[in-house]
Amino acid sequence: MEKKKINIGLIGGGFMGRTHSNGYNRVPNFFPDLAFTPVLKAVCFRNETKLKAFAAQWGYESTETDWRKLIERDDIDAVDICTPNDTHAEIAIAAAKAGKMILCEKPLARDLAESKQMVDAIAAAGVKNTVWYNYRRIPAVTLAKNIVASGKLGKIYHYRANFLQDWTINENLPQGGEGLWRMDAAVAGSGVVGDLLSHCIDTAIWLNGGIQEVSAMTETFVKQRMHQLTGKVEDVHIDDACSFFCRFNNGSLGLFESTRYARGHKALYTFEINGANASIRWDLHDLNRLEYFDNGDESNLKGWRSIHVTDGDQPYMGNWWVPGLGIGYEHSFVHQAADFFKSLETGEDCAPTFKDAFETQKVCEAVLDSAATRSWKSC
Ligand SMILES: NC(=O)c1ccc[n+]([C@@H]2O[C@H](COP(=O)([O-])OP(=O)(O)OC[C@H]3O[C@@H](n4cnc5c(N)ncnc54)[C@H](O)[C@@H]3O)[C@@H](O)[C@H]2O)c1
Image 1: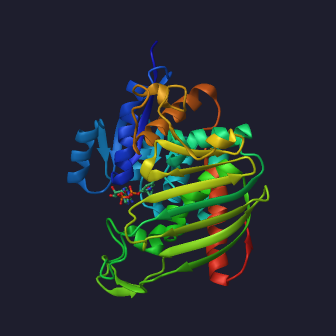
Image 2 (image 1 turned 90 degrees about the horizontal axis):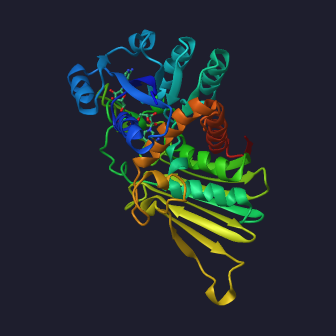
Image 3 (image 1 turned 30 degrees about the horizontal axis):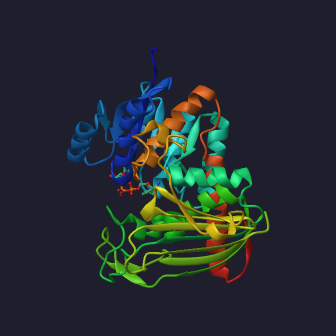
């Protein structure tokens, strides 16, 4: 069967530019039944030397140094936004107006106001869209979703999540500019809330439903840092750490923590859900495993079981190797790309859409607002 080609225009060639390019390249080999297939038509960023090397390394047919030019091109069907957060709204709105499909990195934007403009632009244009909250598509996390949806956990009481890192403890680390834009609130919008907790919130809403209200605290441990672009020591405006409590619409209680000051942790994302009948927990450092405790088990065999999510009948795994062989972080992006192309066949949304990511952004905004005002905020 002749496959329908979707010409991709990728903007940004850093960490995410690489994961997405790898995803597109893997899709035809591992999801051969899809009717649509990606073509790496163009990649865009500003450093021309690196750009040519990136295009050659990942197989892009052409390059652009101005994203506006890429969006204007008739031979681009889908725009993939892999740039820092301050550019998401402008690029996505322009791409929507040009009638392009849009795949956008998370968080949707720097704040709720920008996110709203993006959601409105997408709605007005009626273009296909998705946001790369990729953790949903790690097979063990998708299995967690299936278990929750089956009702096996019973009434849910608690949801707990952490996302811990330690890369900003050094007080001499500068802020801003290439590689360090996450430290600059003008570019990132926020610190760990938008960068890390947004992932935890997206998964939580997906697994456990909407969040009603939050009570949060944030801290900026290092108050001033040299700014790479100005060369001056400037105030730091991002949240270095954030903890918050919340109440979900289903009555369960949530507890979330994220920091870049947890010495020893590089990227530890964990979550646990406790229901009346069963509990599940997951850990990014052991991402092929889902732990499950079922109170209905025979009493002398009762205990946490560790499910190695690698069997062909477990989510996505039928497309990979043989049972017992694990996959990695990068596969979550392959899965999201594959699901995006599948959604073109089915006409269904490829969740999370901009609208879904807007719900996450609402919680992020309420968390920051709660911390700033030292009060509970509804989402
Ligand atoms: N889904 C995830 O797990 C995940 C992980 C990391 C980052 N992200 C998100 O992906 C986005 C990019 O993060 P990253 O880590 O890849 O950043 P990065 O700094 O590694 O790469 C950013 C790229 O964007 C390019 N760029 C910057 N401004 C540009 C402009 N105006 N026009 C064209 N290109 C421009 C840079 O040259 C660079 O190639 C961010 O929104 C971030 O929050 C998501």
